[in-house]
Image 1 (cartoon, rainbow, N blue to C red):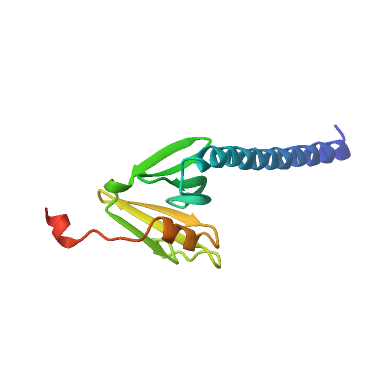
Image 2: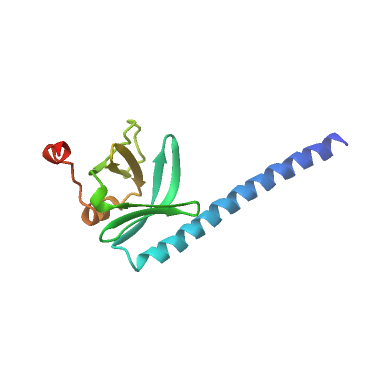
Length: 144
């Protein structure tokens, strides 16, 4: 195989890989839109967010009804009963101390000693604070 043919083959593989990545990202966006539409009828608030698991940020649809908080994507369907959340707080940085993009905030939930963090899109922080007010577990309740 000539050197020019080899270069064209490598270039073709790189372009194909880029197209596959673009397709996957666009497909994921469509799936998140479908999940958001499904939740809108039964939820007080539905937005996109990123669920932070270690160093990984997983795009999810975050929604809250009267008694349940849901976070979902095409691979994940999870929920919390609001009554079982020990703490709800909002912050400008992750618990690891990592700063966020300008305007982004973190919704941090604690349940039974485990912390769950969601990076909210700029502008969604006020909506979430209204729909899901911050609260802390009181010391007397923790002792019981």
